[in-house]
Image (cartoon, rainbow, N blue to C red):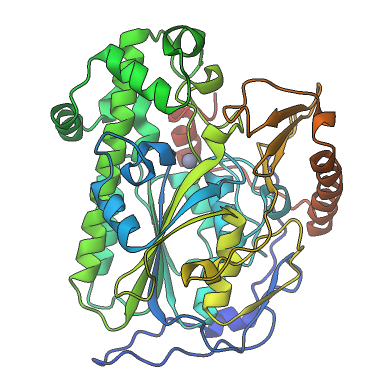
Length: 489
Ligand SMILES: [Zn+2]
């Protein structure tokens, strides 16, 4: 299954773009990025040459793993799981319709970093490495004179962090990754201009009682007392089910939650919320530590997730095997430290593939080779009061490793098509069936079906064009971790 990628030297300009740490009191002028392609062989090419569109000295991308937006206060959740993110959303831009391209940790992060859907960037499962030719956000920021640094909560994300100058895995709980990030932040040679990716994994651990955060569990119990039955009913109703006792919970089955019963599921749902509160606090601590340094210039904060979580919908608790919208919807909040971004709620659809062209535009770079149908679209204008473009169709997929069923979804605001590798397609009328419970024949949405056919051909052609690079076997450390997390048997 794993073969080695051909080793291709990175382009020389990367080696020249060393971090530029400024030492003066005043904010240094933002450098203009040099012209020229970084990796001409990669499906997206980037040219520089323009002034940055927005003047940020620091960009922090925070990804909180496995985070359903509907469990955050700013997205309407009644339990106080996210006081810090709620405040950030109040002073920033909150997107109500943000979608993941794949409900799988490493491939989704690779999409955030490359702007390409998994079939095209090629990292389609945890344990794989990103193609060494890939142009990532770290590549762009280095070219623009920013230092690039990444701290993440699972070892296997090493497989896509090579393009960051500094990157550290700190597995297990979020405290460990926060400690690494805070150490770096307080180190004497910490640069003032940087792109930093911080990844917290805690919500993923809702089914691991040994990692449950007791303090946050007790705090939520005090703030919003609920019996197990009330928790059941409340969450089922929030997830859209009007008869939770029969239609929802009694149909639950998941290999990842063996031997569950009513009470044990309620405990895990409590734990999911407590893990969210814990991640919210860890992020707040990092935010406050960075702001307390009073560095020159402004910081842009982007908070999102790699994917959602089933939590029982469609009889499934997890995320990897399904791409219903409980797996694909993600929160997306963008805020600035000093008022450049004004508060706004945006209902236009955005996708993970949009982050790359957005930040390229922010840096004054132009992205070339974009497929206007299948690739991302910059949402920079939406951060500064601009109007949304035409409605779009979101492409998502699941693991494409040999021997696994290919599963693709394409959805507009009104319809969703679910295409299985085998068996008939399913089609959902999202206006009348937003929970995707009553599949219809694909012919009910002929325009979406035609669009799928065309897009599938283009995705496949570009994946072929990129070539099937070889993968080296994942190290034992990753395999142990993937086993522990239930991804590898
Ligand atoms: Zn994940």
